[in-house]
Image 1 (spheres, rainbow, N blue to C red):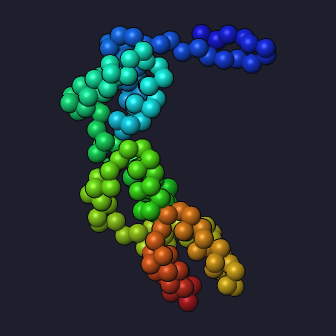
Image 2: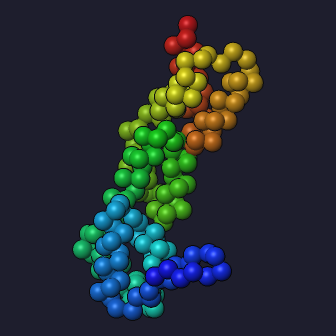
Image 3: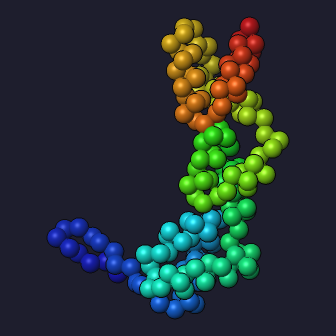
Length: 165
């Protein structure tokens, strides 16, 4: 329902007070993408009358395997990895979404982070070889911001050096 309020539109959300309505709304979120249980709780906590009812519904959906933190973590990990982000950043983002470090470490053991850092570096420089120390430091900062570890950054830069010889 939209209400015009001094030139600004505000949306009033219906407060959910039945477990069936809560479950339907959660399923609506899950139909778009995977969510962690923490994300679902955060999105729904201001929409429900009873947090206890919300927690019960989340637990039912977890037991029905409709909400899975492992599945969410795998999906999120693959998405962020494809976009060129490193392990430190992905692990931090997953932690913010309520995912344990143990889940992160179980989904990423075979990943070659140095090669992914090299790919992100190649995309960033777009064929232009960095020629001075300032440009190299800028690239190191870029990879650091992306969440790559220093050993992977150094290896990626040496791979770039070898390719440009």
